[in-house]
Image: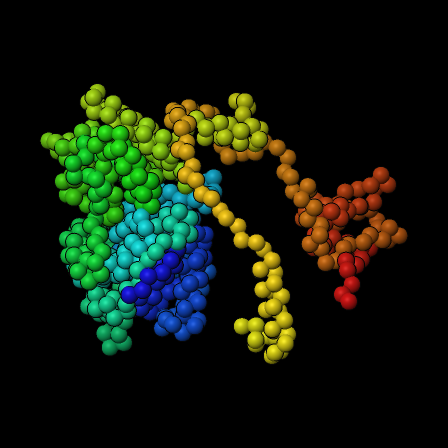
Length: 409
Length: 138
């Protein structure tokens, strides 16, 4: 074990190096490129025994990675935002092959307007595909989650691909101290992948990913994916316990921060949760019994953990770093759906913040807690509130004037 | 790494010495950090605005002619007025819209923006445009 200052991207590369992947097809995109650059360097220097191939697009890249997985190889690839959308067709396809591909997505807002900074609309676009999703807050979490992801994906009870997500720039380019486990320890935790269902052997020919005609066959395969994904919740619990014994770092499907005795709970995902935790601490200093629940697993959705942690709270605010245009926050709907039948249901509030990497200031969190208290007192809340300050509105107005759009209508 | 490129001994030593002298010439700087006071701007309700305002559009002329991208050029096209028939084939084909007509109807080029792609040279049916190297290699 050694400790180094690593960016989120470098931590991801270290995770991939430690699991000793066989094959890495790549295509560059900001802010992900540092991952594949780092791997390319190590492979070229002979430090990794891995086949590295530069592809012509993300569509080909995900196809190649999934296909390699279907031969029994341990494969990895990474992308972001527009790249993920360009390869979108193959995300669903590879998931249906039931192969344990692990990918990293470095979140970045979607076009248009085109941008580079993060939000979660890219990763949430593949929410329903069958890929499992692990969302990371810190660089250490990125490295560890990749090791966990292979173990989870390759488990015979799961056999679904996993996407490990980190926020572009805020995590991908932020250096944090990261413990790099020893290779021997990782080998012990993650045995070689020996598939019984999908592999390449000349003496045992098979056709994989075949077509079906007729709803009953299609329904069967899709529902089996769903059951396997739910099974992954149980498996995840087991392997996290083992991981903690081995490496002394524990990761639940959700993480609570000052949550147990909290009356007002904030739900967040990704690196912006750090801002949320600080805000919770400030709120506590002011006498508000605040807490935070961070979602680490988004697929499978940890309903029972969530219900257990949030039932009986006075109010719960979901702060979505995404927007489902025409509906609102995506995670709000998910959290609401698992609390709606609860007898101890808290009042639920929906906020959207951090779109395209927009900062969430302490004042905006204060506003959010005020609204929670208000909603509890009134016993209800409605609508989605975008966290946006007067100062930001003024800056936006200046931009509109510069673009000569102000006053056009 | 430099050792493989530079000859052994003095040349490398001299370079290291020079680099060190430059490095040491910069006085170390004390940076004081203070925690920025939290932004106290109130949260607002963002109002609806029609697409005429709220689409990512800039209602102004493009500014690329101001960028003076002509300095990319390796070869410049030069017109021979003796041969030019004023057919305007060059003007029609210029991908950057750099060619206009002068008072006499001859094509003239904006060298500040012409990137020297030489499509005009190929397009000229009278072979009246010459390519001339911008700078001689010494």
